[in-house]
Image (cartoon, rainbow, N blue to C red; front, side, top):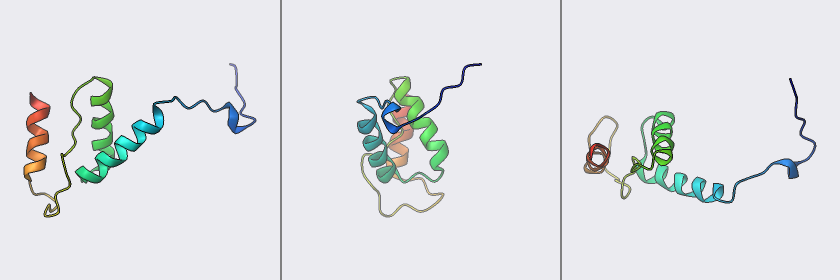
Length: 82
């Protein structure tokens, strides 16, 4: 088994699109305010990998409460099934 050692930060190669992906993800999290961040994140990146529409709200809904179905969540669900 070959072990690879890290000696300096310059050995870390970050793809050019990576910062943009993180920025887009952070904005989507803030807009959507998912109840289960881990599960939502898995679904978000799975959709990106499969070129499907991500489960993201168009805008932040201030009146959303835990367990309530809002117009934004309903719109996301409809887009996922199309």
